[in-house]
Length: 277
Image (tube, rainbow, N blue to C red):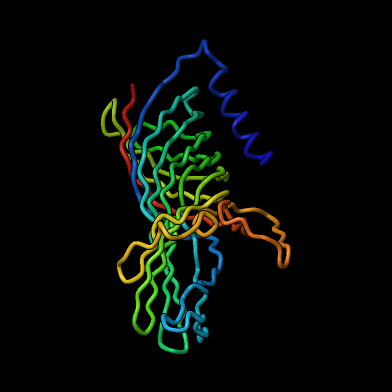
């Protein structure tokens, strides 16, 4: 956290300093794809699949570990930047991440199964310092800075037992994702006001949602969400939980459950175009 604060402080100083010097302002738009990096292993299992006749949880026969990084997927956005010196600049970028779905499955001894998928949509703000060369046509550059993420994680479940089908969807949000980013790229001058560029980026980011809401639940295609009490469809994610055995349960309040840190680290490739004022 301190390192991120230091990066933001450096960026602020860069923006405020050297006002008397000539400044070159530019904008760019970019898009690309990111691959998972520093993924974590998640085990997808589920204890909500029931035999429709006995309402007894069907015995689990197998589940699977899945490599997960929600930073994997499409991203696009734009940047505003200032070139304070021929070799030094600063940028603030806003990107929108649409991740791929990661799916794992659980199978039960009676032949029923349950598949769970995770995905995300997230706005990412990236303040960075830029170091670049000043050649006539092609200029390598390096960026380093922070990532501040705001978004949601979507968890979807698809269940099938002997006679019935189930579907549920939970949205998790709250809190802010914080991390660091670094990029290396090449900038190609095609006009006095336009450049094209390509870059490889490394993002180190985790996100721990603070709350969750069950937004859909169906059995055999019939909406059952209205029948579920608040405790069964609203969640507060905490670091520690406590239970009183045999104590009263208030179904009108959200249920506390353990928080989970989701990985968003990625290695990406982006291309874009820059307009220089």
